[in-house]
Image 1: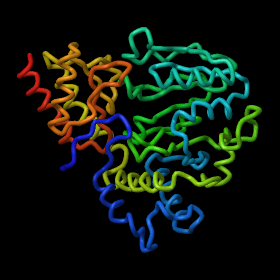
Image 2 (image 1 turned 90 degrees about the vertical axis):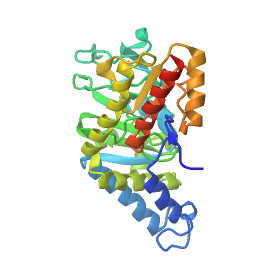
Image 3 (image 1 turned 30 degrees about the horizontal axis):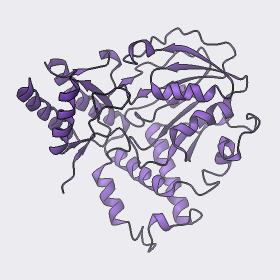
Length: 360
C-alpha cells in the first residue's frame, strides 16, 4: 500500500525522508552493528547523539545559554504536575484557559496550590483567544500559564499575554518548531513531540536555569524535579532513547529546509489553501474566529452528523486519513503539521470540493 496523507493530531505525520533514514539505520546505526533501540544510553555513541540533537535544537530556536534543554518522558500531561511542583513558591499561579489541555493543566495545578483562571474562552466553546493585553495578573502569582496552540479547537495565540513581569509558562506541543519562538519571553516552554517533531514518548522542556532549584514542593518525587534531570544531562535514568534519535533527525530536516522562518512561510502557505476553501465553501465551515486560527490544526464542520460521517469514511477510502474531529467537539479536523506536504492539503481541498458537488 502507498503512503496515505495522515491528518492525525498526534501521533502524527513525520517527514518521509526521516523515516527512510531511520529504516536504513534500523539494524546498524553508524557502523555500531546495532540499532539505536539496542544501544546503551551510557555509550559514547548515544551521548554524541543527544548532544547533537540538543545543539541543533538550540540553533533552530536560538536558545540562550541561560536555558536548559531537557529530554523527558511522561508527555506534556506529566508537566501539568511538574510545573507547579517545581515553580509554585508562593503557592499561587494564574492560568489562561483556551481549551481542554489548559483546563486539565489548571485542574492538576489545583492539587498543589491556588489557581486563578484570569481569562478563558470557554463561553464560546474555545473558538477564540481572549484579549490578553491587560489581564488581572495576581500579585503573588508564581507564573502565568498558557497552552499556545489548541490542538482540539484550532486556535493559536498570535500575541503572548502581558504577564506583568511574572514568569510565562507555555505548552507548545502542537505548534513546536512550526515557526520561530522568542525563547527569552518564556520561563518554561515545553511540548510533547508526537505532533510536530517525533514519536510519542518524549517531551522537551526548555527552562530558564534560575528556575531549576532544590526549592520544590514537599513530597515532590525525585523523578519530577527539573534539577534531577538538568544535573544529569537528561540521563538520570534511561531516557526515551529512540524518540530522541528521531527528534534529532527532524531537527536536521528542519535545518535543511531553511529553519523556522522558512517553516512558518511554508505552513502559512499550506494553511491558506485550506482556510480559503473553507471561507468560500457552501457546505463546509471553519469553527474558529479568523484572527485566532491555528496554522497546525484546522477544525471544520458540515453541520449534519450523517454527512460528516460519510465525508470521513469516503476521505479515508481516498487515502486522506484521521480527519474525524476530537470526540469532545465532533465534526472534522485536519492537522497539517510541518511534515504534511502541500500536496496533502491540495488533495484534501480537491476531495472536499468533489464531495461538496456530489452531496450539496
